Amino acid sequence: MTYVTRFAPSPTGPLHLGHAFSALTAFDRARARGGTMLLRIEDIDAERSRPEWEALIYDDLAWLGLDWPKPVMRQSDRLLAYRAALDRLVAMGLCFPCRCSRGDIRAALSAPQEGAPVHGPDGLVYPGTCRGRPMSDAASTDVIRLNISAAVRRLERQRRPGLSPGPPSALSFTETGPLHGGRHCLSGVIAANGIGDVILARRDIGTSYHLSVVIDDAAQGITEVVRGADLFDATHIHVLLQDLLGLPRPVYHHHALIRDDAGKRLAKRDDARSIRRYREDGLSPAEVRRMVGLGGPDPS
Ligand code: GLU
Image (cartoon, rainbow, N blue to C red; front, side, top):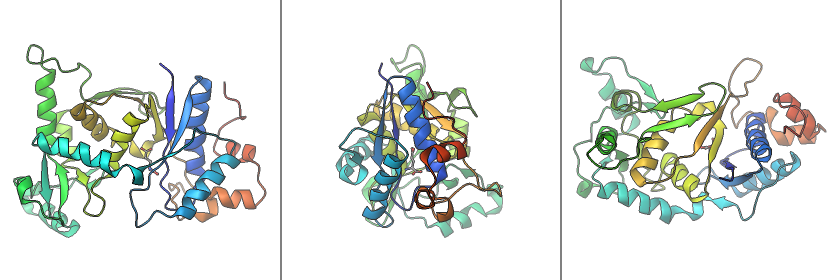
């Protein structure tokens, strides 16, 4: 199978050294395997995405010496595909509308019987307040959540031998990255207690990062997802959605995060470490490569 990976930045600010590391890692892995790195612009957040940031992404990546097939996929062009996937999950009876604000969730979790609140891939694990609400009750101001326990149960039922021909790999994935290498499997307990009923569709955009990324990785034929280790935990959600929607499973490669001198993860607002700043300061792409710990331009 031809190797295909992607770099999927959100055009909400300048790319920084962490993005350079991610894009170069994806590009190098593709080249070493005779494959391709695709670029995808993750611009579902219309409030924060800007054309000038998108233009800067193209300039920065080209300056770094990367190229990619055109046209580039942009998530804002794909809202209908996300809608269709959401409709399928709703038809499976796995979704519910939720009107809880962050404050409501915090308040519900601070009730004495709840124990200590747990942080999952999307922040506080949702306490299930609206889980009993039917979709027929959904208002335009509601978000749509996945009933994660019901989703896992559905897939576990399929997996049991003799019941129906569910794939033996259901809910599990292979990680090739340096931090968590090996095989990982989502259990019902982790799903319920460590992840919770994730949001599939936000009020404003009718989709979410998780839903869009899964649909697009499949649409682009991605065989290995290369991205930062901050998204490792979210991968369980992606694998679950792939199995529910019958989508192929890529391999995952989560790389270490580039940190600043104080050990903090770089953020978009960290303009001091933006690629643009290094370009303007006269650094060469090879120097940026070395700064993120990658050797010469030819890794193979
Ligand atoms: N758009 C995400 C970001 O900029 C990356 C998502 C992914 O690689 O799955 O952090």
